[in-house]
Every structure is written in C-alpha cells, then in structure tokens.
Length: 483
Image (cartoon, rainbow, N blue to C red; front, side, top):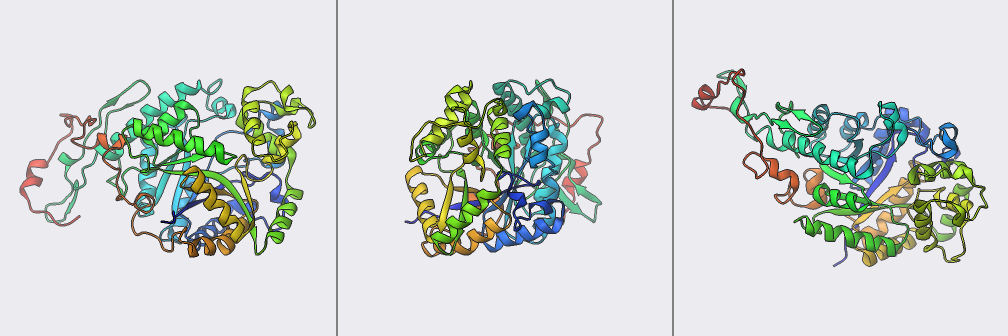
C-alpha cells in the first residue's frame, strides 16, 4: 500500500525565518508579517493544498552569538523583528475549516497556569485544531532579558519542562470532568462544582493549587509537538510528543534518527507508529527540472552568507565571525560544528574538506534540512524515496519565498503525489489529533497526560477546600438540560 505523506508548512511571525536574504526577492511577501491578511491568505492557500497544518516557530531572544552581538541579526532580519505566533491563529481559523495550527512557546519563562488558559481558548476557537510545539529554550539572549544570566543547563531545562507539562496535564485533563457544564437554566446552575477539581500541585518549580479556568476544549490537551534531538530531548519527546520534528540533512542520518525515536517510544510504553515524525525540508519546484534549477539559482543570488552564519552560530553556539570564510572547518574549535559539518559533508557528492563558506552555502535556503529541487514529478520521486528509505512520516516544509514556495508545491507536487495515492485527497473530519493520528479527539490512554484524568493512575484531584461552598447536592437532585 502506498504510504500517505504528511506535510506542514513551516513559517514564523517574522521576515527571515530559514532563508536569510530572500526577503529582498521581489516575489517574497514575508515583510507583510504584520498584516493579518497575509496570514489569512496563507491559511486559505494551505487549506486549498490540503496541508495538514501550518507550523509556527518562535524565539524569545536574538541570534547574538555571531559577532558577539545582535547587529548581524538585525541587518539580515534573522528572526528579528519577530511577533507573537499565538495571536495569529484565531483569524486563520476563521477562514479555514480543516487546517491545523502548531504554535511554538517555551517552558522556561512563562508560568503554566496562564498558558493553559490561552491554549484552551485557542482550542475552543479553532474547534480543536491546535497543536503546541514544546521548546525549552536555547538562545542566551532570551534568558538574559528574562532576568537570568544564561539558559539553565541542557538536562535541567528538560527536568523543568517535565514538571511544566505535569501541571498542564493536571489542568487540561484532570480539573474539569466532561459533563461538568450542565447549563441548567431551570435551577440557575451553569457548572456542577463537584465535577470541577482543584489540582493541588505543589512541586519543585510550581505551586498550582486551584482549578483550570476553562471548560474542556475539543482536544483538552493540544496535539503535542516536540523537536528534541539530544538523548534527553528524545526521551522527553517519547514521553510527551504526538508529532516529532527532526532536521536531518541526509537519508542515512534521518533513518538513524527515526529508528531511535520509534525505539524510545516503545520504551515509553507507546505505539511507535502512534506519533508522526516530520523532517525539515525545502522544496523548490516548477513545471520542468530546468525551470526549477533556474529558480533555485535565482534564489541563491538573493541569499545572504552573513545571515546564514548568524543562524548557524546561534544554532551551534559558536561565533563563526571569528573565522574567515575560507578557513577550513577543522580549524573551528567546536564539537557541535564538526559533527554538524560531518553530517553535511556526507550529503556532498564531492566529499572534500569544508570551509566556513560551505557552511554558509548550505544554510542559505531552508536552514539545515535538505533541499529538493526539480519538477513536480522529480520532487515527488525524491520525497517518496526518503519516506521509503527512512520510515519518516512527512515533512515540515520551509520556504525560500513566501507564499510562492508553498503555492509552487501545491501546483506542481501535490497533484503528482495525489495521483500516486501518497497525498490525502480529502481532510479527515474531526480535530487535529484525529486528522493526524486517526485515534479520536483526545489523548490515547497510553499517553503520559492521560494518566492525570480523574480516576487515572496519576490523578491528584483533591477535595474542595472547605472555604469554597458547594451546591452539588441540590444540583444532583435536579434535572438538567443539555450542555
């Protein structure tokens, strides 16, 4: 049976997301990021193309490793200026019926209690089409501007995130019972207090004694997205994520990553295929191979090496401005750089020693993921080959120019994949979770979060404090009318 490939559009509420310098291209519309119509037009386009979702990245800081400052990032608009992603979703949901929305926020700088309400609000307003990309943070500038000297140690950030999600699961899954809202107009009772529970959380990082402020949304817990690549990050993803993002530049590395993720899912007691794995990729396509390669060359003429090195320095924690463009990578004193470049070189048919300039060339369009360039047929062949050889479920598509890269994919690649049975020919009804995983609107029973439901093995529901009056006896004795 032909495998259906899943696709998200990858964007950010900023100008230069993954392809620095392309904002100068006359067809690029990323500068319209402040215009709500840009986002509603993009959402409508993606739904026409039957994309699974629009995944919105985010940072809460600047890329200031390159050149030991933020000047290069500002010159190149390298994810700065950047606006909040969550505020876009309700408008885009209004002009679509099926498109999912994955929003990125970090666990390091906001208390989980107000965040739980914002996500539940979006899940209500979208009819259950929201996912949350959990990030623990990596930019030192974000930590400094939030009153910290630097990001906490890597594993400590995940320990903190573990408790962050524990609080959220208690609020989303365990605070309100499904039938708590009775909307009884005869007796004047909107919510049965006995079916709304204080979570009583008192942990290492957070104290949250009370109830969730929102009634249950269609999914309760949003679809959990995660992109941890370290052993600790993969373990965190295996325990929590329902969609996992990777950024492997080659098939060999992606195959190894996917195998590791599915093994960790089994160790966590979960279905190894109950989670969708997406790899970062960029598609540049046109009616013919020749036109696509000409388009790729044109895009490269606008791409900016300084912007690419600004991103690479931030992602890898090494100031590449300290080295000349022709400096051999072997002279760069960084295990992160050397291991990343070893991965890039494995995709290089020439196999020669790389210089800093080569790192910049790789990162000019689409970040560190692979690029697929060619006609719709050629790109479809490559995508199916990657799925077959790596066991990945789909792709998170970065753009060269927006919305043009997405429109080209819809016009040239989607019809080919659809004809081959490798692309969904219609949306599945229901929430984002059901559309992606086909197992209903709520978390599956084996998921960590499901254990925090009322009566679940991790439920911490406590008795209502005596200072809070309850009218449960009168409510239980009276007839109710539908929710």
